[in-house]
Image (cartoon, rainbow, N blue to C red; front, side, top):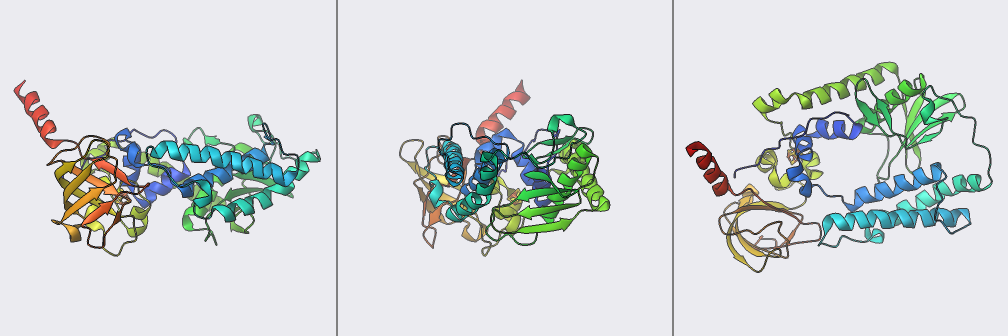
Length: 384
Ligand code: SF4
């Protein structure tokens, strides 16, 4: 298999999510910064649900009730939720056209998360409606940000080129706290990654207010709070790591010599959209890994009209299926394919023996670059 290698754009501003993805696997962020692979990286319902929660919290936090017809606090939050859910669904559906992703009520954890968020936000709306004055704010050094609390304000360290958007920065008595909202159904004590995120946010808040936050916490709407201790030493360590990750990523000469390193594992690859094109995954994956079905293969015959083609394929990967013949149906392909072309597919349903593979709404297809065209172009260039 001739695997396409990523040629990523350099990074200017580094964020927590970039660092987290880089720590899981440097190769995955290299793919994510090369537009040739962007079609593989589409939103999924879990991420869309998280975006709905953040949008609702942000709108309520900023008193943005434009276009809302309800007058009762709980109904106002419900209306905002439904509006934001419709927006996220539209984005999801557009990304997956012509496939039809499930509608919001069928997203994992949708009903529970909606109920919890509405319960959490309703008292805040009630306060707004009573037009109570905002609690005493800590006026920060950066006047553009206004007094605390800050909800979903982007904060930038212009010198180190780090940015982040904490869900909430607020005063608790005389202390500044950083809060991040998580919607995961199994959220408990913050993971190492979440602690890292909170500490990076603490740095950005310290930079803007001149004060190191006294604490930080992960909050699950209606489901508890998990605080962590914030120390200057830990914050400085995380900031150094973020800067080092950015420098490492941008060191193009290192990338050119070594290539971006893939660090495959069941967890990292399970979340990764680039399994279809990743040689590290193909080499490392095991039959018992719980990841979405992924195959690569060489087309032996084609029936139907593009884009919905039925293909016979000789499987190349996973290696325990290598050499077997599989028919692929119900998949939309990004370009015409003929016999001899290499293809990849993920997120499909299959018979237990893989004699037949069927596309699902979340199937992602890929056609590898035509090697014969590449070879001809190279030959032409040499002759010229
Ligand atoms: S599939 Fe696995 S090894 Fe490959 S880029 Fe993604 S996380 Fe890294």
